[in-house]
Length: 99
Image (cartoon, rainbow, N blue to C red; front, top):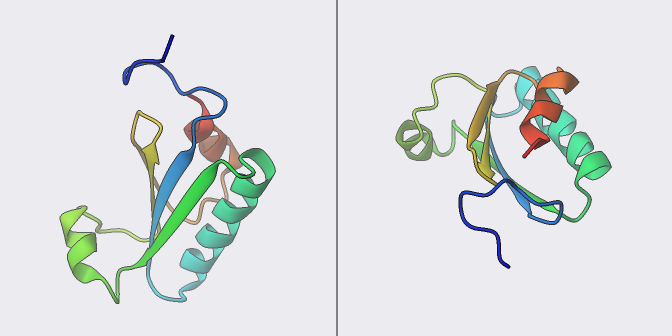
């Protein structure tokens, strides 16, 4: 039986993250490093990370209502979750990984 769109994430369902950053600002760099480390440790081979620099892609930032950087959006699996900051709070990040 296949899971429905509304069923919780399964162990093999890939995670998709979008990280909005402000160039090479310290918090943006830290957010990228922290997210990559977490994904390598807990989601090896089961994640994709798209990094969008708001200085280079303002239109995408506006379309996604991004007013603070860094901003992480977990797009998949559902539910969508948004976190602000340099992602150094591992408890918050682990909460995002729960189905």
